[in-house]
Length: 216
Image (cartoon, rainbow, N blue to C red):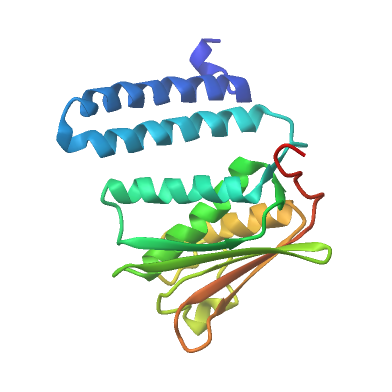
């Protein structure tokens, strides 16, 4: 079997790193032109995220990551995609209780990124995405809301089914969101915000032991 035929996780991660190295080389070339400096930096940040995802997939599933770190990475991904001209002007408002821990940080980044991309498609003229996270009793609650036109009532109950979409996407992003949330023992629901000012997604998860403050 040739090295490129290695379908084990370490083999696939190795092949992914080879692809990422090609992107690094391309970013280095772009960095020499002042017109593409920001895009080059965005590509390099995406490469680093790709390497971290590969590493976390091979790491023990017992590891836990602070939610604020996962959120920061997901927001950075969206902001870098905007640098590449892939969407409207988007702002983030975050109100996050510190110390919330989640497992499988790469999967949870995927959850947030899919929710953010869904919100961006609902706000073609731009707007604000709000993120709130709180520990409530034995649960962690994460809420992501937007300022779009809301979810069509006829698909609201089926929104997390594969290939169901109200904004022209593939309809797989929200299905992936529900799959990851359920794998971590949680649930996710969608609703339209009062007054017709957008949609709101609420995730509830069993709470884990809190992260210790730095230096504790």
